[in-house]
Amino acid sequence: MLSILQTTLELGALYAFVSIALFISYRLLDIADLTTDGSFVLGMAISVSCAFVGHPILGILLGMLAGGAAGYITAFLQTRMGVPSIISGIITSTGLYTVNLFVMGWSSQISLLKQTTVFTILKKINIGGSWYASIFVIILLVVCMILLRLFLSTRLGLSLRATGDNRAMVTASSVNVKNMITLGLVIANMLVGLSGALVGQFNKTSDINAGTGIVVVGLACLIIGESLIQGRKSLSRNLTACFVGNVVYRMIYAIILQTKIINVQSLKLVTALIVALAVAAPTIKKELSLHMRKGEITNARYTKSFRYIQCRKY
Image (cartoon, rainbow, N blue to C red; front, side, top):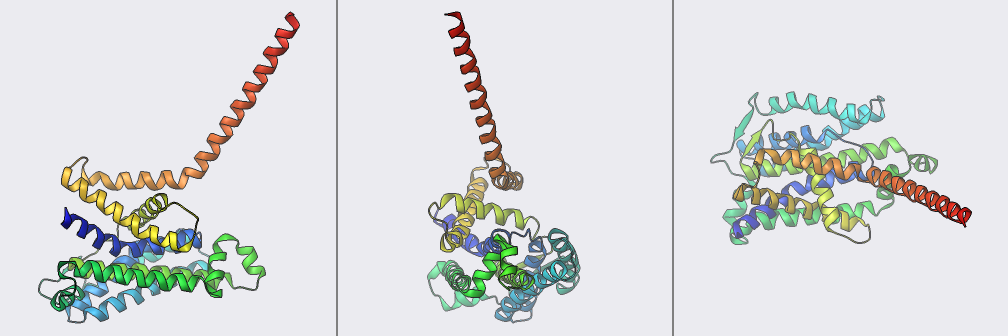
């Protein structure tokens, strides 16, 4: 049980960067960024390729920067070329498939067998015993969350947050909306690239299909975390929800693997349903409220008519 908890904490922290990135693009900017699938694999491919030739730390940094570059391309297509946000993400992600293959030497998979990674370095240092990976990733995640929290509280960060709420107001305040969208997508995809880079070295492998469905899983974890952490909406709450949601999701995944309650292959379908219901929840709630109101009005009319008939009888 302890090993399952350790694994879920490690994977939860590793993939929490993706949920934070989706929080920036989807929640703050109100943009469905589909670059995530491609930039995740790009960060992974660069990280593992660098570790393969003996530069694991440089690989993490380059993977993060490459993810940011992918986000910039998406933002450029959207803001400068007039391509819709969803289409621009699809275009970038499709192009990145070939780029990722090129980075991986036109191979669909790279394995690190005896090569040094960031995690093997930490293991040799022997800080935290068998929990060295969990401690490192959680500390890195907390540092990123604090830095992001501080940035989003600055004047520039507040302008970025306002862009998703009311672009007309931001434009009226002499803030360049295009620059804000570009900045947000670059930061988001840098976090995705960092996640891919860390996951690649953690698993000691890079796979061309590793990013498939990562957007849906990341959104599901974000939604699960937000539903579990109640209270006043704040940046700290939302960022914490990204981590908590990922840990809970990985715990559910581990339990399913152990107990075989349902087929593991069905988990993505369940995840997709969770996201669909969560996104559609406001509309469903509105429709139910409307039907209930109509029912109350109809019942009131019937009651009034019944009383009128009763009065006529007497």
